[in-house]
Length: 346
Image (cartoon, helix red, strand yellow):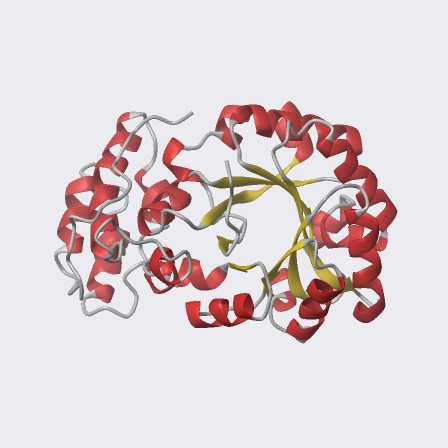
């Protein structure tokens, strides 16, 4: 599969699970989606079905792996490829102390040669599925102007040509993961310099991007694409509803926009929820990703309270449908071309 990385949704722990990604895909057919970070050890030894299953409509879909053992990463890569993921991504950017203590995530930026060994091992088992690396510009007291070009050069020499760079340092002691997303200063210009210095590489930018016009500005500046995280989760329709038209320039045969609508996507989540419940799943596993999806619209507060107050009741699809009627959607168009509901999970 040819993947466009013009826009992607960042891997987010306890956020971008298969239910969340299914909903996002109903809003944008083109945006590249990522799994949560999954430890290579868990993939190789854990419940693969629970960890890796996804719905076929989620493509294009990348699997993000955390780890530092080349052998385990290679094995996890092969499993991910066999499972059907379209890209395998190595996490070299997570600043969590729990992750760092396990010797993976952003701490690996201090071991560029070892990262090169890791991705080389992964590539041996990728069967031509692309391997990518998500990193920071530096960690702790490293000088980003020196460490980032050196890191990119060393790791790319191992064969990786795709880098997603969160344009901030990671401070591994003293700052929480949340603070690491806000406090270290953002440096977009350094990432632009990296693209200029390594024009043959695919360089994508992550960090504090909040709208599609900013994405287009970076693309026009030569960046290969942008990755957005929390802003998509907080306000999915703001980013994804217009992405196929504005970023990927997708139109129907008559030249009209293929724009989807939040209302249409939420309606399609009703049969998805029904199928999930029929298989013994919990309603909250799906609804927790939808409860804030209508933020900013008239009736959003009633929508949220209706769902949260009735989360444990049995007739969740009916409650969800009633909650939708409490919201004043600006666009209720539902006959949009695009993804049809399908209940099969591979």
